[in-house]
Image (cartoon, rainbow, N blue to C red):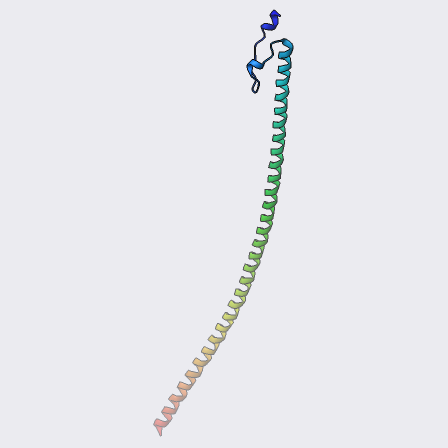
Length: 134
């Protein structure tokens, strides 16, 4: 018994110090109970960690799927915009060509009208000279 009284007295959370058994077998039983409670707590914490890891994985998958969907949508939007810009440039090029053709036609008409005016001015001059001779 002399060796038994030299064991240190422990106080564990949830166990009152005055309810601690005094005999070696009682102290070992209390220690085993304490270890069992700690193991249960550890198991609960491990389970909580695994649950959190699962939640994290699910969240990552969710956001990865959202990111992929956004990329897919954005690629589609960019392709549509590129097609629209391409179509607009083609329409603008056609309009520019049409306007350039009209400018060319109008320049030709202007030149023709200027020649007709010159011809009419010469004719007027000739008529004036002819009338002046009479």
